Image 1 (cartoon, helix red, strand yellow):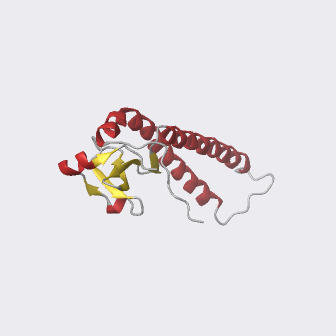
Image 2 (cartoon, rainbow, N blue to C red):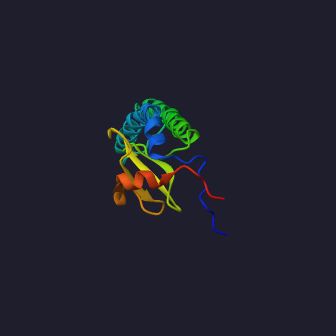
Image 3 (cartoon, rainbow, N blue to C red):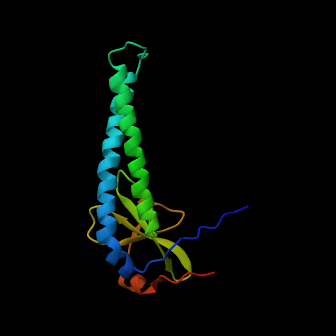
Length: 151
């Protein structure tokens, strides 16, 4: 059975840009924490590589504490992702700060694509292509993008 993607919300370019201040704030927190979690996870894995941690190991308590903190931070990351999804947007990369806004271009469901640090939504791509295949929005396309959902 093939599942059909049904976004919770559809955006026009204007609506996506109007929501950017809130999306930007959440995405900033997501990016900073994502990068920190990745870095700390890599350091922990490096410390654990080639060594077996046994009872009495002086690093055991410290590693346990770091792993507990990482677990709590991963929960916070999930909360940020859920906040974005509740707004109707699709976070695609926490580390890179890539967020997609579902939209309709003519009769095709597409994503308006934004990356943390960009001043506004300026790109789009199809559902099955990703960030690497995004293309600039043109003035003509902006008028062809609607928030209307099809049934």
